[in-house]
Length: 539
Image 1 (cartoon, rainbow, N blue to C red):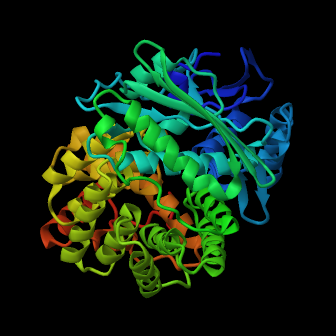
Image 2 (cartoon, rainbow, N blue to C red):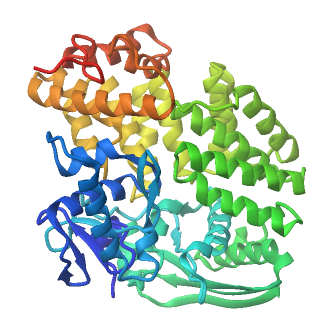
């Protein structure tokens, strides 16, 4: 099957897809027997994949405004599992979280509108002036879904190595991994990602042996420019990654002079078990919820214990603490813990762009803004193709009152990462809100595949600022309800005044005027005027 832009945008994996227009679940070309309520439940679980979804949120999605018993929810979840169970292990894709709710942990299932038409399709990006390429996820013959992390980690390291070339334009991991597990038309991939060249390959790890096949293809003509096979011991994995990066660069037209540069993948660790633990941890933190971050941190700690000079393990411990701080999730770890870990990482390897990006965020959270900007700049100098650092820098610039600069950086990040994560749209919309471009902010937020509670809050503020009071109130109710649920799941008390739901985020703004503007939009929408969350009086 050829993967179209629309299906790629939806991250299809396997034969299932949810059709939002008909409220149906399809398996291949045929609709399943799932009813509308069961599909609504599955859709919410997919939109929050990897995160716990409470029973209350699920009931509201399938039975809006109705009071029903938990048994009805159990019946519908069982129906979803029966249908998913038509695929191997499909029934286990939805986890039960006792007394809390459910969580989707299976492969991605796309949500489309109508006959394969996606939400938020965008036009194909133009080719950059510099040589542009994407490294697609390598296949892992004979390896199950849960064990593909090794090949994924190897590809991520190759992407990082290539990204360090200022003379290249390299697509971010998030967008190239849209094609994972799919048979693709390379010419179409080139058009969708806006690149001239594509790298693809396969990895097989058998005991202590590593077999890698890789090729570089001209996406315009479809011609293979270079290919190679490697059969090495597992301990040579970094040398193989290095050789692939060098070969790709030397093959690209006009890049021969770069072939000898010492770019690549400096050997991260001599301990393959430690490397494996970091790859497993990377798979976990990307779910961006409290339990996943805690599990990832334990993997990184184990890796650092095996090799105390493994810089990435220390940097990633710090990163999990940064994520928890930005998610406002309570944790036993402190910013002081993060600071110690990231300083250790940089003592070991001061030329690692990722570590400088993490350090910059730790410093921002500690309100050491001048040093934070210095390390953002260092990270982007070392790796000018790092879309995630560019996007986070844009977000921080908004809090520093520099929304115009933020727009430049977030647009750059979106070009490097065409299938942008939902967070990019939040960062972008926040900059537009600071610039009083409320309608553009609304359009940007609606490009996201799903909205988190703060997106609902920002939509409420935008609608209120342009006088759309009913829409503002609707989004405000979503924000307050989800924010109260967050607090309850985190074991935190609900505030006496609902305006306090937003103050913790408002405190990130350094300028009083920006902080006031953020809260004023929510006040205009009605936050703080009456109680919205638990304990509110209903008419």
